Image 1: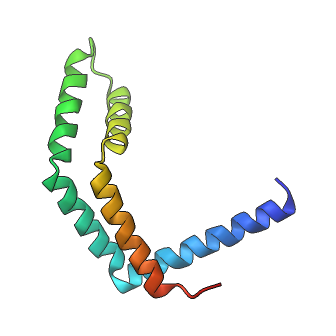
Image 2: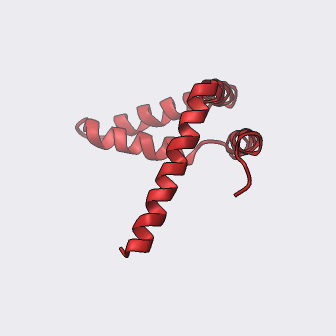
Length: 103
């Protein structure tokens, strides 16, 4: 990586940390977490993920916890409904619009 790339990465990291700090200190992080949790519950995502984990575990000749966790993590990330992702992104964008000055 070049010095310019390192500096840009560092500036990006600093921006991310500042935004994360603002999300936490304003309570927005907690509010978004609750919103995400409720939307996932409403969509039966957790039930579906639990069913996936049970089916995967039953198919294993010998239970391999590391493999099961990896499978559940992969499935969990891939199976979040697009409506949930879109709603959360809208909320984050709204927060950014209200809290970030134009550069």
